[in-house]
Image (cartoon, rainbow, N blue to C red):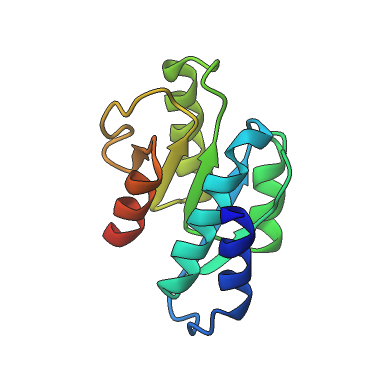
Length: 136
């Protein structure tokens, strides 16, 4: 029911797109879909141009999406089974290769502060997603 309400609100949202592009991508599981849809709505409501892919993608597809629709901010759901050090390295490479300003990582069991010189943050709850969107 909540998912349907967020989707309905997102569909009628008339916020002008006055801010940069953000990609919201799921590299993890379908269980995170509600958080991803919620984040998409929060960002669109704040005027961001949001690229939301739905479904689960492979890490290699991020660059392809960026080449079609460039974005400067990336929100990723990455399975908690992936070690933090691997995720940090992956985010660092994406920031460097795609010249990203910010990366949000979801799918961790707990927030462990900011990574990659403050350009990557971790959010573990809907409240943390809202706080991150407010800081952009």
